[in-house]
Image (cartoon, rainbow, N blue to C red; front, side, top):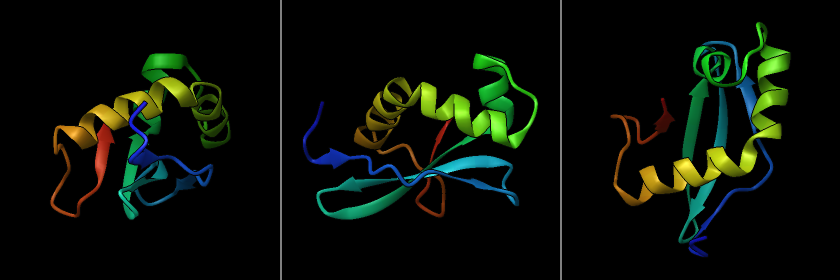
Length: 85
């Protein structure tokens, strides 16, 4: 694990994006990360936002590792958000 990237437990469901959004702290700066409900459903199942948020929490370590790799590779959208797909 890269100690310069930390993931506080502050994930939340975003009704506009239909995604779980979660912050990463990269060398003290916040980077937002996200994974859509559709992606969570395809990986782990579930059919509603409450279940997707719970599935995110159950699979947090793997998803954070994936986000860490994307952050390190500079993979982000035009708003600076890193999306797991």
